[in-house]
Length: 179
Image 1: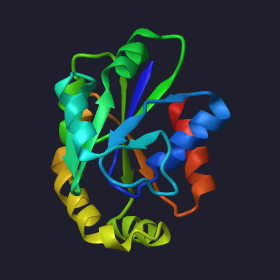
Image 2: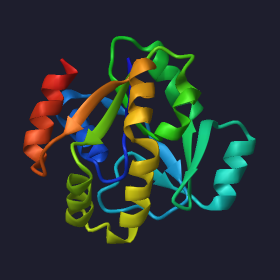
Image 3: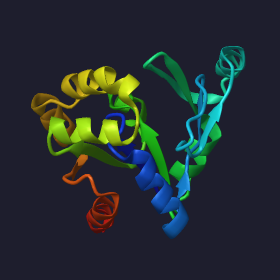
């Protein structure tokens, strides 16, 4: 079964994916991107713009996205495998603004939201991603406001609210949420 995690930058999606992979044998879907990898990145592959464009033209990607100056490509074969394999769990961190790209597939849609904007700001600071604070807060205000969240709920999204800066508490809450 495929599960997509949606949420603004620094909300904890990578941490959740790492935990599901390491402790519950979930398979993360890799993402190809045109920026350098961060130390915390998992299941991401940095490639040049030239290679990205070549793979895109060859049909290697199921879909591509652009955010914060970076191009992202989701490989087609891994999506096909995840959608057809109902006996295993697959997970993908995906951009909410392009959620419609998966509407025709049966999958679980989880929107991860901070309880407050202040909590998001503190997570950005603790992740040492100061350079992205303005972009992340703007993305949060534009794509995760109450009207849009209501729209997502009507589209079948489940909402997981991050209420704490403590990673362990959030992981425990998320595991309860999954069941």
